[in-house]
Amino acid sequence: MAKVLIVEDDSVIAEGMARHLASAGFDPVVVGKGEQGLARLRFERPDVVVLDLMLPERDGWSVIQEAAAQLTRSGLKTNQLHFRYIHPFQAAEATAILSGCKRTIVVENNFTGQFARHMRAESGFTVDHVLTRYDGEPFEPAYIVRRVKDFVAGKPVDLRVEDHEAREMAYHYIRIHLQEKARPGRLKRANGGKYGEPVWEVELVNRTDGKAEGTLVIGMDTGSMYGLQLPGVEAGDRAVAAQR
Image 1: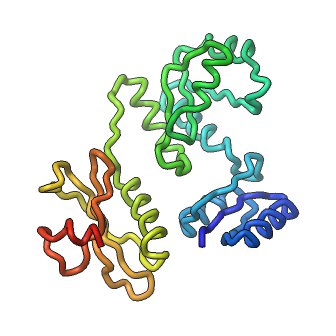
Image 2 (image 1 turned 135 degrees about the horizontal axis):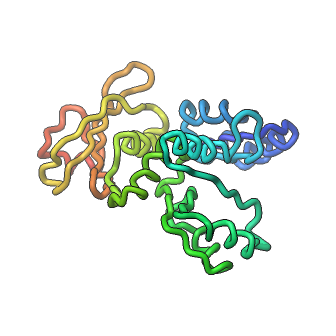
């Protein structure tokens, strides 16, 4: 059963959404504040998040605001422009503001940069960089700060899978293949051998007794999921284990 996290401070709306989702076969979890949503996101590992952008304490825009504040404190003067509507698009106003900026970066939570392309089509303005996520997972301020500093420094984009991304991928694998019976444990780098790239080896352990369920192998360069190595299976048999 797919789990849906609803972050909504209006109890009437939240309860109505939860009822409809439950009747459709989903498992809804409701919280009323942004900070609670972040905590439950890490704990519940939902399949889908429904987020109200106007929340008490921490809303959908506060992550960008916090990242901009951190960048400014570090000496990189940063501001934020939020578009509430995409239709009708305020092309003249957007162009007037953005044209006065030394560098522009769009932060959007999808892989293809849909909003950046929409803005270019509506206004003719092209941003310098687009900061996206391939997996739809929420942004954290520290991640945005690091990526923006890399853009400004002219560093090439490093698309290798990082440790926290490997852990997130392990959670996705568990939800699909192990029905939440396990959780990620220790994580280590390995040379990859026959895979032709370095890999992350993520230990999966049983949520109840902590016993090993196997080791999930994820390519660091390509993000390929090479499968689950079962306990007691030798490295040479890893390909067989991945097909089970």
